[in-house]
Image 1: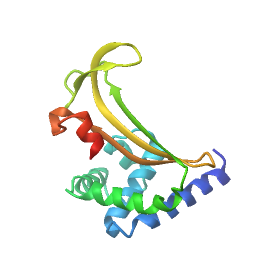
Image 2: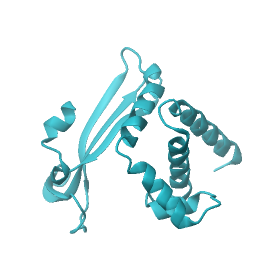
Image 3: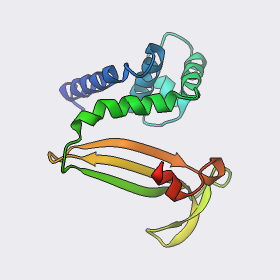
Image 4: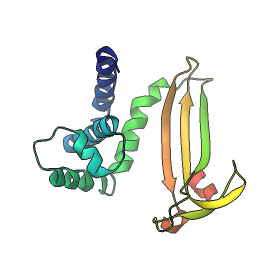
Length: 168
């Protein structure tokens, strides 16, 4: 990626996180900013890998502990969701499209992962182990996409039915 494009992406990300600071505390905003940067730099979404992608002065174990402390807070993701919705609500206009995708993530080789369900794969017509996934995205007239909501859920972990998850 060119240096100019990298700088543009960094500026866009910085502006986005400034909008979130109204809903999150400074340490929470720093955590989510650093986790996003780590994911963009390293690729994997494993906390240890994310922590290696940021330049932190404390040890790797302390950084991962700090990340876990924040994202395990009871209301952290609700605050993050509300902050995100406040930052994107001005972009949604009349006659734009809101796309809902109720899908699943197949885990073909996983047998012992927490919360897996047997679900029919619509693409292949087979039944396999997977997680339920719900995505909601906004598409503007300018052909710009904005993710609005993304949730991974399991009936083993409190989901009552797919319909109830959609209605919530």
